[in-house]
Length: 119
Image 1: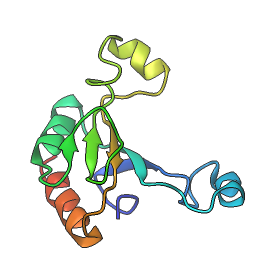
Image 2: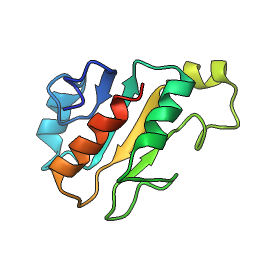
Image 3: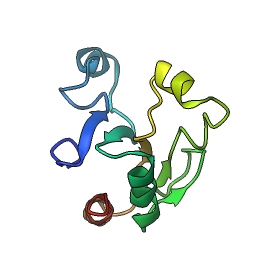
């Protein structure tokens, strides 16, 4: 869903054939995990609107649990770095990390879709 959405610039997930290390992941892993990161076609304000519009995941720094959790690395995990230093290590303002929980996939996709419509 995310990879095909017009408001999503790039998806980082080793389970996708488009990931630069997909072949390695396919050889080494029996599954690809539940954390997906993606860049939005948005600035910081648009990314924050997207995060605020999500209804299902909780916002949090920890990505471990059974419920879906969303994180905004530039304002949570890397808040102490200025924008230029974050970008230098690959943490853009439009980067979102999403840990998929046990909720129904259709509900999660629907929630992502309505939140993406806000940017």
